[in-house]
Length: 103
Image 1: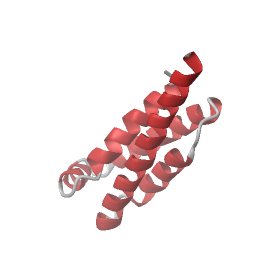
Image 2: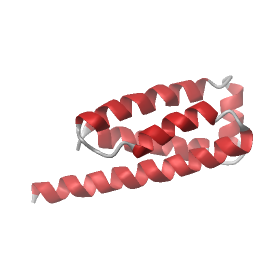
Image 3: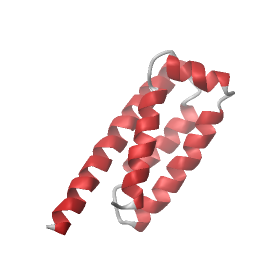
Image 4: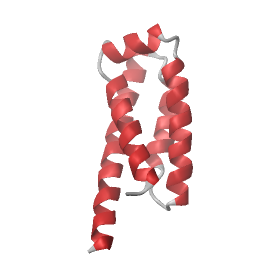
């Protein structure tokens, strides 16, 4: 499995967690928005590996935008959920593409 695919699974799962109403926002506030900084770095790393592996980058770019506007309460939750959907679908498609090449 490609590194970019693994990173998309991880970042997509974390984005889904941050999108949980009240729970994700409470944890982000409790840690003084540091999870958003961590996610920004993770999305940039995922973007670099996706470009290197010549895979789609829209989920990582959306994740970077989400990390920048994630501090806005309702908008942040919606953006985290949308970003999670994009990243997880993209990771799933990458996994199925890789398995077709093996056969």
